[in-house]
Length: 283
Length: 318
Image (cartoon, chains in turn green, brown):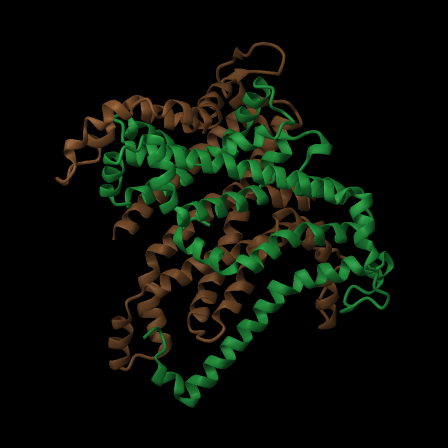
């Protein structure tokens, strides 16, 4: 049983109390979860005058779906979304490569110096990147990477938690398999690609999920590293568009910027919630 | 990965000689550890990425805080000059006070809410997925979009919030436009945006509470409320502690909210430490001073992280 047993739940008083608390909670969650998204869609379809004079209307009297097309064309939303996709895609690839190769080396190959490397990697968890942002920026300048997406992709790979997840997962794989593969004449590369990786889909999915979510949501570093407005991801672009764009177009742009992650979440909901549970504490 | 493809086959010979370990419950080192070079090759991506973009910037940040540097001339050592300039800035005190205010308000407003929600959600048997979906939905909204959205809701003249409160005769409030309410407005949005993650973590922990405890308590006639108070909450204590630390670490680095909502205003009421670092470095070009303040922030965050990691370890070991 959990907190409340089935027997107990059949008692009318308990049942009524529970139902009403749950009902109120559901109403509250709809209000705070769907409410803002609904208002965004409504706002995006409203003429600017309605936004000012009738903020409480549940639906505009004269809906204007063409706002989306206007915002798409005038504010270049498609272009910025494409930039975000590039930022997210590259960060995801770099994080996966770093986590898998490092996790494999530290867990399966286990060189003698491995513990020191692992220690040095884990030590970076004590220093969030925001506090070394200034020197990171100077380093990116030295390397000539400003305005290149590499300035986002490469630093994103230096995320110790990914390495920890990969190593812990590989640690739990049965070592007999590695030995058997070796007897069958597999070299180290084949050991990784044919034995370890096919068994590691769950952890690859979790690392991918975290990588995509982090880079989609990151704001401060892209703001610093990408100064060319043409190359900015949508979040950075929106922050500057907010100052000049007309209100109705801006809201339409916001609706288009939040649609992709919300749709992805809608489709992969179960996996995402399970994946977050898997990582335990880190969201 | 292409580098790995080419070099990896090399060690197959020597490492294969190590197979006698097979069959016995030999440590894996005897199988593959012989060739440190292979391992090194596989570690190259991590070493490069961590070396150039994490370890070096951390060390360099420390160095720069004692240097005068711009992007043209070579850096010169200036001793504690950056720290002196930092402490002479009247905005430093403001930024620290504001950051602590944000951290405190976020604890007060944002910390109990997910716990209460998680306990209620754990009693839901049918359509639990719907609840979870709704509670996590704000988390997937990109922060800048969420903040701009709330900025529109907060608009004193035509915003949703004043409109709704006006229906019950409250307000109008200035929200972001008044130094008195700006910070609370930031915290409300940030709580909304971050709550879902904590709820899911609490929910996962609540599922792990041994059911015998509830059964025994129920036999002793403990009410539902007593069970929540004396079983669920004490059982969750380690998780509560971890989330508390995690929230402290996150909220001390608050940046996006003040940057997008208010730019630090009105009257510097929402100027936070990280926003001040950002201004030093990327508006004034005072990299040394920015690094000096980062250094101080890093010490505090490092201490918190150390506590956090210790707690995680003892928690996952338990």
